[in-house]
Image (cartoon, rainbow, N blue to C red):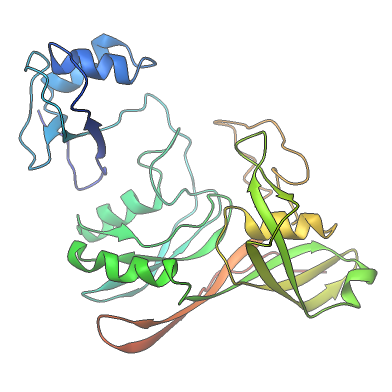
Length: 300
């Protein structure tokens, strides 16, 4: 029995040349010690571990280095995300989706089927579909996908070269002292903190910048428009927290709250939305602009 790859994206693992294992099974058991040996044997027997050209390999096959294998992850339990994504645009080059809060873009950790990528692959049947950028699981809004693998690099380079304009909206605390300074561009140097889930600001030359504008005030909250000039992890969340106005319902800033693996509080979504995205398409040589149809909570 083989896995239905139309609904699940495989993972890739590199087999180092300088490692010596007698069998492929020995490598996987050593590489992933948290997974029981019997589980790997089951996956091999089910044809869920393959070469790059999708040829199944056996647990007893001799180890061969300097190559990649693909395998399918398995989860006994996965959090159910009851919110639906929407396809806003699709042609032969890109697909643009509106992602709901709580839904990861790609498989990781506890999430496999309940990810934007695998949901869209199941809906469209496009197996080469691949995100050309990411947004946090907690953030809602626009995500752009490449439809053809051969064009993926061209689109990803747009983000690498900062040729994409992105606009976010956020609801955070009202601060009279900050409002008087808006609009403003906030800059800082960010790096990963002692806890890998959090970013922090440190002394040194800025490596992040965010333009901040005011949209609406309904005390004690305000809605802000954010235009990131850079794309560091958690940049917007970290910047607003540093300004004393952490985003409403943020479970990471200013304090990291205990992570609820399966019992998610779906009534308290992070009030951050990837609202607009625009870029010059390097394939069709035209300007592209997209707007999310999702909304943050209404201020009243």
